Structures are given as C-alpha cells and as structure tokens.
Image (cartoon, rainbow, N blue to C red; front, side, top):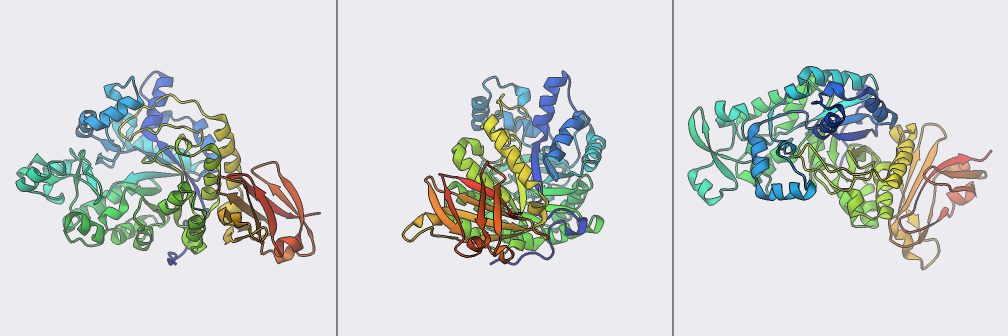
Length: 505
C-alpha cells in the first residue's frame, strides 16, 4: 500500500480535504461570450452571475484551460495537419479558419494574451473568484514549448537537439529551425509511447540551464494563480526522460515546487500523470495526482478491481484526482449508458479525493472539443443528466463529504449461493458528530443483492432511519441489524443509494 504524503491537501489554508474542481475551457467560453455580446470578449466580460453559479454548486477550484499566450506557429500547425483538420471538420461541418486557434499547450509565454485582457484582467478574475471562496488553477507545461517560443531563437541550447541523420530517419520527431546560432535540428515534444507533438519543441532536462529557466517560468505562472495543473508531469521525471530520449536528467520537481512554496505556502500543485506513477508524483511534492486507475476500472465494470483500488489508505486517497472525463478524453455521456454513467459518477465523486468536473459534463454534452479549437458544436443540455448532477453536487456540498472520514465497506452475500454481492461498492462517511452517510452502488448490469454491515455500535438497540439523498427511498431499520448481519440491499442494474443515517426519534 502506498504511503500518504505528510499532511492533508490544503490543511494549512483551512480548505476542505475533499474539494471540487471545475475545468473551464477559457477560449471556448470567451468565444461563446463573443457570440452573445457581438464583440470580442475578455476575462472581464465573464459575468458575476457565472461565478456565483460556480460558487453555488459547491466548487472550490476553477481550472481555466487555455489562459496562456500561444503563437502563430501553433495555429499554423493545427490548421495544416491533415488528420487534425479532418477531425475538426467532422466535429464542425461549418469549420472556419479562425475556429482553429492552436493547441492550448503550445505555449509561447506564461502571460495572458492581450486579446483576453492580459495579466491585469486575469488578476481581476482571480480576485472576483476569491470573493466567492473560489480559487484559480492554471496550466504549466514542463515538457515542451511552442515552436515560436522566444527561446527557440534566443536560447536553442535549452532544447533537445537532434542531427541531420535523425531528421532523415525520423522526420516526424525532429525539425530543422533557424536560431541566433544558425540552423539547428531540434526534437519535437513527445512521450515514450506516442508520436511527437509537431507544434512543440522538446526541452532538454539533462541541461541544468533548462531546469533553471523552467523553474523561473514556473514561478512566473504561479504568481498569477492559486494552483497549477502540470501537464504530463511525469515526462520530466529522470527515469521517464531517460526512457524517452536516452539522456540522463536530475530531478526537477522537488526544488521547483519548493521555490514556489517559499513565496506561497498554500500554493497547490496537481499532476496529470499516468502509467501508475501517481505515487511518485506525490513523493516529488505534488498535492494531487490524477487517478486514471479508478476511471479505467469503472469503465470496465470491474467492481472487484474498484474495491481493491479503494482499499488504499484513505489519507493517501485524499491526494487523488477523481474524474470521469477531461479535455483529453471521450465524453462519459457518449461512452457509457445512462444507468452506468450514474453509477460510475456516484462511485467516483463520493470517494475521497479531489472531485474533477469537466465543462459540459454536468449538462450531458456528448461531443468533446479538441484543444486546438475555440468553438464547439451547438448541443442542448440533457435535462435528466443535468438534474442528476444537481442532486449529486447538493450531496457533495455537505461538510461530511468535504471533511469527513471515509472507509470502504465489504459487501457480503445476501444469502448463501448468491454471488451478486461481488458487484457492489459501499463506503461510509463519518463526521465528528453524529452525521453518517452510506453510499452503495451496484456496478453490475443486472439486479443484485447484498448485505453491508455498518460499524456503528452507538446505534445498537435503537431504530434507525435511512434517507436516500439521491432518490425517494426511506427505510427504518433496527440498529442491531445494521451492526449485525448488515443492511440488506436489493438494487436494480447500476442502482445506487446515498443514505443519510439517523437515529429515529
């Protein structure tokens, strides 16, 4: 079992242990505002009513994707890559050149573009969020820069260099470029398992000067927000960098994170990380790390695998990012049935950790918008999905689910010879007072039964009311039964309960 990092996320700042985050595609949002206003929109045009809505939903973080400056080279790469353009046209049959704004991760500067109001407008937005108890998270891309980043001309030694032979052999991974030192061959950014990103150049983390320069970039980005989501953060780990490029590198994150925290002890770092390296990122100093394992097991309907994953120490799990979609992934409403979607959402967002909601997820959008575009297709909200998430967010606003203690419960057979208990996930939230909440989900595509024993000895000898906060069900049971053989559950395919447990009057 992994060891939890010291402390709990946000403890020093008095923030919730299990916060909620909303990923906002800023360029999409400003483009939609432009259509309503009839003129280009800046960050100052985001209405107070929108910020009030986010605060009212119980969110703690707004993660604004696409806040930084990008360049003409990135736009050109996005507009001319045939396979990308084909995908854009499939999504937007009326695609226009201006819709292709270039990747949000081909960054030329950690500064807000003048078109959105610049850094001054970004800071005003941050202050407006703070006034509502919300914090601002932005991106940091450690692995690479845009093709037209100033360093390409001024400091090409900071990038991983290739050769004419490598360019001839791997034309998709390298590019010839003119610099202040003359023509050079530089590597495109990539990870070890996929083709290179042709709108980027790879930074050389084997060069101490590169690490020093990127630490300064990190500090600059951190000065404009309250937290950073670090894109593909594991790519600059020494072992991963060596595996990708065959070059040695010193660790980057511990010293870089320490430097930022010298200026702001409450600053939060979130790692986008895969390949089972979330534990390593937390050891490097991150507050949160993506939990792709839970997502994968839920999509596979692997209830036993989900339970095994959730057996990890609860303090450890409070550092994991729970999600069902993000800008790199398919829409959950498109890939899961409505019943399975609800079950997966209840498990994901009532587990301990940071709850990550993606723009459009709450409304049931089905078409993901690539990060190269600032316009998406018109889609009507799905009323059933929107109503479900409204109920779920209401439950998640309870202090119990934000700061309570959580434990996994083991479902038992409802009767001998009935194996369907194996498809249940059950967890118990306990507050400092008498508040208790039982969440139980049947992840199977068929009806199932189980018993769940509740370790609440204070209820022995008393009648107990169980009130479903996500549905109309209300039961009265004997406390002796709950502590003895356990609560009997009989749920339809992908059914769920979120029972508030109260001693009956």
